[in-house]
Amino acid sequence: MAVASALGPLATVAIGTLLLALLLGWLWDAVVSVTRFWATCHRLRRFPQPPWRCWLLGHTGLGKSTEEGMQQVDELVARYRHGCLWWLLPWMPILRLFHPDTLRSILLASAFIAPKDQLFYGFLKPWLGDGLLLSHGQKWARHRRLLTPAFHSDVLKSYVGVFNQSTHIMHAKWRAAAQAAGGPARLEVLGQLSLLTLDTLQKCIFSHESHCQQQPSEYIKAILELSTLVVRRHHRLLHHPTWLYRLSADGRRFAQACATVHSFTAGVVQRRRQALECLGHQAWVESHQGRSMDFIDLLLLSKDEDGNTLSDEDISAEADTFMFEGHDTTASGLAWLLYNLARHPHYQEQCRQEVRELLKGRDVEEIDWDDLSHLPFTTMCIKESLRLHPPVTAVSRRCTEDIALRDGRVIPKGIICLVSIYGTHHNPDIWPEPQVYNPLRFSPENSQGRSPLAFIPFSAGPRRWRWWSAVPRVTPTVVTEVTERGRGGRNCIGQSFAMAELKVVAALTVARFAIRLDMGQPPRRKPELILRAEDGLWLLLEPLPEVA
Figure 1 (spheres, rainbow, N blue to C red):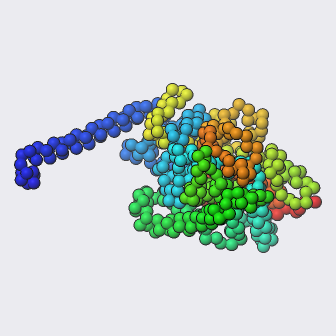
Figure 2: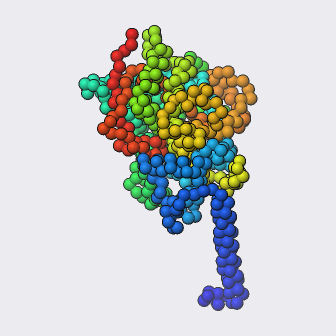
Figure 3: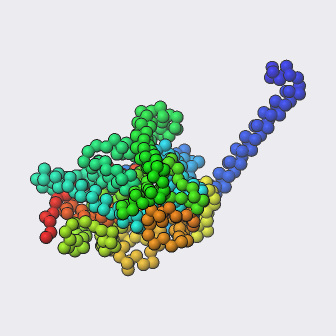
């Protein structure tokens, strides 16, 4: 006020008017925000909600990443068959959805209307960059279209040999462990299978032989550490602010691991780019004739309709994303499959007989691409295991617009929807006796009339991708000519890759080993980035005599 007095009465009035305008603007924004929040709360009253923990905390602390937390989800689904409202705090509502009828509007909405929520996914950003998992809008749509040819069936065929090779390496380790034990080998299978999937991915993405199943790898160690650190940060609220996390010991370890991963990926991409530019496009294509191309090769050659290619940064982000999304989820699916087959020896034996019949008379015990469609019972066992123990238990979406449900209710703009894959897979309205492992649920006759959104182990989305030109097979030439046409769906782009690997590893494992439960250490489920088991998932594996 002393300054205002020195400037005269007009200055005093001006400063007072400015302060009043700022105050009124703040009050107006506050009134609008409160009014909008109450309107949202009014619309959310149509969704049932469990009792609050207390008026201040809402449901905070009631949901836990433990076996008891998984059982709580079963109880919620049994009571609220379609979904319920969950308050993390009194001002942070989340809709938990458990039924295809309520999931449909979210999962079939475009990525612009129901994008991934960044509350948790944002922690992955320094690691994965703007890959498909974290990008959105036009960039997501463009990358989705350019990456689709890399997962064409003719490309996946060349990877089956890699799946066989990596499985042989893992089985050799298991036989050695059984021989050393003088009987069945007691193994923590999730860790073993994670190394297998990381091994296959390094070969399929980078054509890199790391021998990570037999010896330590700094790159693989960094990926495993990043996965652990992301989960730990999620559970520590003080580590949520980026500036605080960077100052912590975990934050420094995370930065170092990111640097290791990024250095490896960028190095491979840059060397391939230099070779492409040195040889020229046509010579590069001709140099790959007669041999398969890896993921990096395919992305280097991809172009949109304007002739634009992906940048080195884009390719590195997609490679890092594929490594992240492809190793843990498939390993979790395989581990719980082996567990379920151990619990049900009669189903295990049926799978074994099916595989042995398929391989009868062959000189080499390997699964070919064409064999994958001739394993119907094994495939049913895989699907039922993915239903009972989905690798990813939930995904989140944030509505950027009001979304109407079929029953007339509306999910208001701005609400986070937690799509409970586990809850949907255990919904008794869809799956009678949901806790029972029954592969025959997926027989052709039992699958008729079931909503495709009742089974979503790889998430789901609108399947609106259309090829406007015939692409009978993917070769280096065809990949070059693929143009940015159609609209991409949001079903998992790598699900065919994952299913092929699941079938190869499962088939060869049941053919070569008897799998039994470790009765001394029953698993307790623990949902993190993937569905794990507290203290590991331990099984007994006994090599079977070779069949003549």
